[in-house]
Length: 547
Image (cartoon, rainbow, N blue to C red; front, side):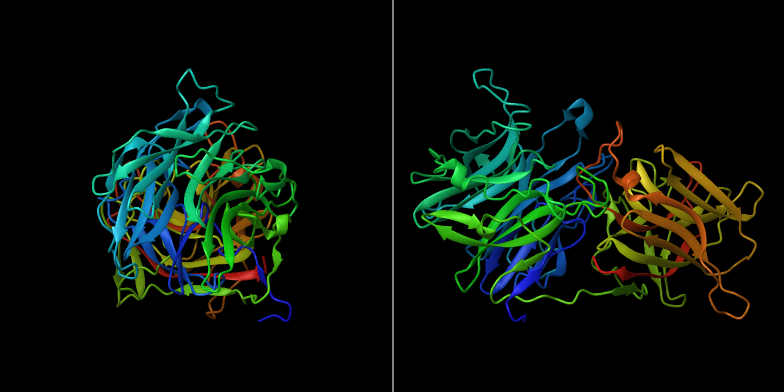
């Protein structure tokens, strides 16, 4: 506990956007978006809103979430978690088609899943699908037993004047057992500025008022949070009070530390204090828009109610170091390691899209994770044999120890810094056309074109340590070979990529909503899988500079 009370943002670093939160007793549970990664929707638990631990995932089976050729930034968007009468509910949708440059987006029919035991592995139900397509699904349980479903879609009614993209929020009453509408569908919030986007709706009730909070302006620099209330019901009519004094309730504008704040959810602690969780971005270098390689992270701010309206952080900008009586700053971990001892993967490993079958196993005799390279390669728009960990800090070293004896030309194993299959850098080793082993490093250059550096590997049948040195503005990729004395030799750099290249938006590389991951991979060649696995002895990261 600090003398004056305070805490450090973000409370959940790395790619953790669109937080939604609920409380059961003294336990807080928070979920975030996962987009094209599997398993879907991490569940974090905390007792104090600051110290969060990953305890599982909501969507862990292919019957719940099947992503095949889902495009970058498609998949799972903005889930909502609620607790009602002993059950947890998560409402969400899976966007399989996402090509924003052409506005070629298929709005999904969302669904909800439930569990009575949030701590139990694979305990979430099969999906119950909603009737109405939408994104950013929300469930509200009213005091009279009625259940309301809210989401976002594009206004297509020609009688309704729309601004910009015309993305608006709507609400309907549903039969919870079937997900079917049992009443009219009513639009309830249109955005009249910026890109014309109102999204991320959450409805809740406090002191006789119904509140509707929405994220507006799009998830770039104009991103902000608005709130309206109604004394009548979840369909409105909605009022915003004196808008200049109330809305937006959250907007960091072009703050140099934190931008793009929004997609907010409220929670009340056991002591009566209210809080807000929301996404934000920490821009790096000369980056004016959505340019943080860590992506959108989860932030926290105190809330005070005045005359029936929530005041977030006393209407001040959100900062990295926050003041809040009774709160405390945590010491962040500086080292993490996975020795792959099994029998299951540690929580926090992800696949890109949904695997059709398991591509790995543990070998106690070899003390390693055996990863079998599949026919799909990491740049293919499918589920390659690749496991990923979120990058949590800007400055950190990622190290992987691996052995691999490829049988055929082109078979490869290695590690990568990953944004999407269109923006990444990798280092690994493969069998060359001369039947020898060679190191290979792929990366995007300053012109955003992929380059490939190749170097012969003279030492045979050795355990290679692959290294990615992450810094705020760039990544260096290389390797370390053991010397004859057994000690490590100097780091041999083979390539680098700038953080800007990793996150840069180009036509055909539009994947703005995710964040950087470190990955291990194995892959076959010419559409054939590997017959021999890559032996990964360990993966670890170490923070070099806090932040």
